Image (cartoon, rainbow, N blue to C red):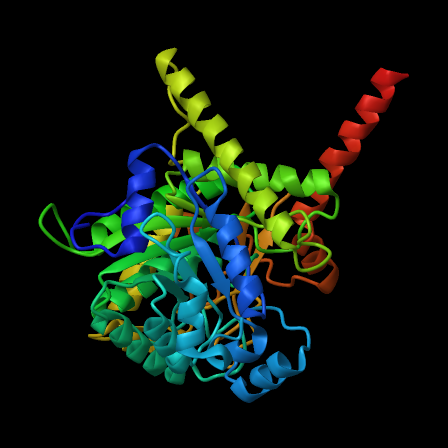
Amino acid sequence: MSGPGTAGAGPFAAHVRRARESGSLVVQPRMGFAGARRMREGLRAVRDVAAPTAGTVTVDSYTRVGEYARALEALRSGAELNGFPLVAHGARRTREVLDGVASQDFPVQVRHGSALAGRLVATACAAGADATEGGPVSYCLPYGRVPLRDSVRAWARCCELIAARAEPMHLETFGGGMLGQLCPPPMLVALSVLEALFFREHGVRSLSLSYAQQTHPGQDLEALAALHRLAAERLEGGPDGGPDWHVVLYTFMGVFPRSAAGALRLLEESARLAVRGGAARLVVKTPAEAHRIPTLEENVAALEFAAAVAADERDRIRARTRAGLRPAPAAGPYGVYEEAALLVDCVLEQAPTVGEALLRAFATGLLDVPYCLHPDNANRARAVVDPWGVLRWADPGRVPLPPRTRRAVSADAAVGSRQLLDMLGFNERRFDVEDVLGRRLADGAAA
């Protein structure tokens, strides 16, 4: 839901709020092209989709890690890049890409992946981008070996740059997408809330909290409910003030189904989950995900498909409501809210500021992302996907858990390489098997 205090929100937040008030889900791609002309064409194509959309300028990998000279060299030589080299193009050229395309009805977000994002964010601000994303933890631990303390310091400065801009700029925490998969939902929810609190501490007033689809729809639905509840409780605000916020869902970010049908089923599930879970925005993937970087046409097709599924799900919910049927409960047996709330409280007790609390929590293992190899992550915690697809703790390490949850932990921390690979491929197998079974049934019916 959109949070309280939306007066004065910038174009990005206002667009999302209008779509939500009209009963629509904003859909958004992960799209970036090296050339300015092609990037502008891509944004125009996304703008022209027959559904509420937000534009994305995804930055290339050289720029993400601060190798601006290499990005510029690649741009000049025509070498292949996997995104838009924002700093190499500069603020003036980027503004030319956005002018006449970005608007109140089509805001544009810069997505990147940089722990030390000061120059990148400054360029995005100067170019007039409506939003960006990241965070001191979520854009540090998964992407390299930059010390967490350096990232916290850099992101404090980024937030101050964003807060100082005359027109409000939106900032989305990537905390709910940590490593893409195999991070228990309570940790994802807690990290999303903690980064949002960090943003607010440094003056950002318009923000979104993310969550990435995992391996069990029921657990994911509960996680979205927990994220909404914790955001409402912890982000100060009321009818007359406070930060504007909404929740954004990411289509599954791990190993994708290889069949087109399986990939579309996964995308369909994420769109239905977004509507059922009250997300205001969905960042989509395409069926090309398992094979290569998607084309512009594939991005547009995925947006149209997700928007159609979301509309269908809204119609189903309305029909069930008219029939007097109760909606599926948002809270279930997984304890996501209880675990996430305890974790947020334990972290905030570590220090008077959110930034310092995050540093102390990782130093002591209170925050520990399973399978994350960053030097500032304890990497003692382990998670497992059970046979039903529920993502659970196998060994929480020093991560605080409610007594009921801790009693249920299997304490089987010895996750071998074969088991890890099996878990990484859970959604790939699940949706590709559905495709195979469907084709076999169709063949049998035809015979």
